[in-house]
Image 1 (cartoon, rainbow, N blue to C red):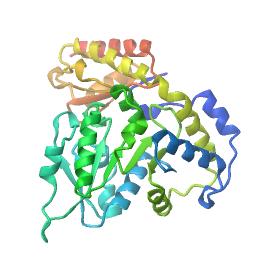
Image 2: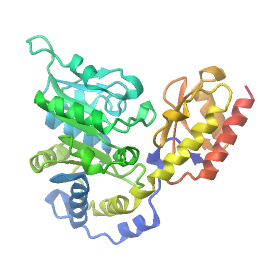
Image 3: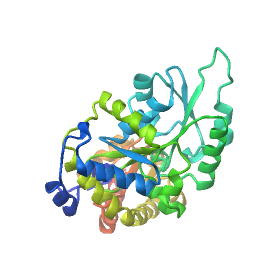
Length: 345
């Protein structure tokens, strides 16, 4: 069966242009710094983000954890929103790899503000773990793809830097955020000491993410990447797809946002489902099944029988994500499957 896959934008397949670029990629040993295609990708990523340097990493999780390792000391805290990817979906990496403790905050729509952050910064005493890093996620995945405003990011960064605290951006979907904010990604990245963004989600590359920052920061990141097993060899076959993703795929993300809106409006009309379409800003939507009498596991199983793949965040809340391999027609078919599955209740 050919499924309509709404589980994540990580399920995207590489385009024909990416496959061709991968097949003809010029390669070398990247651990020796000799892969020319990887170098071109890193140079282009740094240029697009307005940073001095960039580093290709196998995954966004590795990219985030490298940045935590470089910004913090063991025993420090990382202030973070409680629905963030770094807190929920990276296997307690900051504790295991960096000896750092997450200090999660519950904020409306998953969007932190300075007042909440300031209240969480530990006093300088001998009995509190000291704050070492503030980590922002934009867009905020598990909160439903919500977008933090440029002004709020700017306020957080400026006030944190005033206290000599570094700020990292988990910008896995920074290009989606930039569309909503009507800002260039370099303008967003300029606020942060380090930024991670993904090539393998909405941009459609098969593998890989980037971290960007100062030249010194990236030079220090290279041995940490090696320590974590990210020192790959002829990585140009992957970097080639990443170059196509950066140059060709960012301009089409608005289509994914429109399809998510279509889904949200349709879901809002389904009895038992709770969702506010006005809160759906990007390509991710989260809705509440609590009034349907079904768990997300039960609902997911019924959808799969009807050719639609989706996953639950918990027993009540479902997440759906639109991407380049899901068309408007697919979204309409998915809505039909949802109505049919719930009609049995």
